[in-house]
Length: 301
Picture 1 (cartoon, rainbow, N blue to C red):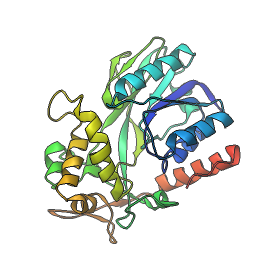
Picture 2 (picture 1 turned 30 degrees about the vertical axis):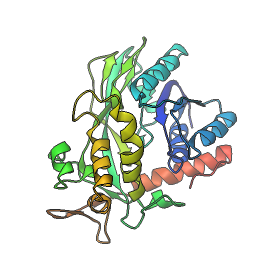
Picture 3 (picture 1 turned 120 degrees about the vertical axis):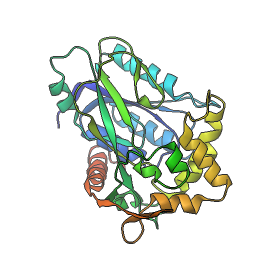
Picture 4 (picture 1 turned 60 degrees about the vertical axis):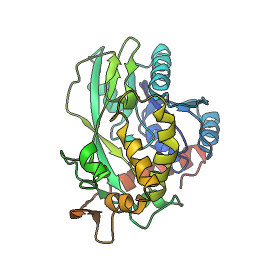
């Protein structure tokens, strides 16, 4: 495996110990030169896992920031600019539930003759089995379905249960740059940096709701920290919706609309929506786990 010495990833992580080993294994295996994690208050062992891995490879770094409100954009921007100052020119921001389907060496080759450029990735949403309601060993390997990306899956239709949250899609941005950048919330745009996005969007394997318990975490954990900084209704609507779902006692309805039943369908108000078999995520996770153990004797399950 070739290490792309100009490519770096940056991520804010919180309470994702079930997923973070696979994410680390994937990006290390993909040849990213360095990955910086900002842990903004994990209590489930995420920070300790990242600390342990950082002691075994200088390609991982992690810092912990304790704060009462969600300051993701500033944390991501600061970490990205530190990587740029340290000599990395291709910066790929990602959330902990996002796996860019690209190798670091590919990015170096594609943009070899471009001093500055912005490029994008687009969610490919994977769906968990209905029976996987909480994290357990190898539970993520059961995500063998892909949800269709529907144009009419938006805040209005999702919150009315007429469309599924897992059918909602977003585009994320990354860049090659010579100067410092500023990232928007969610890494959808560059507030400062290369403006024109070039080429077709790459695939981002996205695990939006890995277990039923994720709905509670989004509603009870994420939303209170975001309320303090929300400037207008509709901003960060997903966590607002999930909090309402939890408080209204509708978690089972939301889980049914966003997880695969025995026939491989989502159960929506308007009827079942068939999903597509896609085993690529499972293959990615297996390879990531194998790499993490072979190189660093650390277990992902």
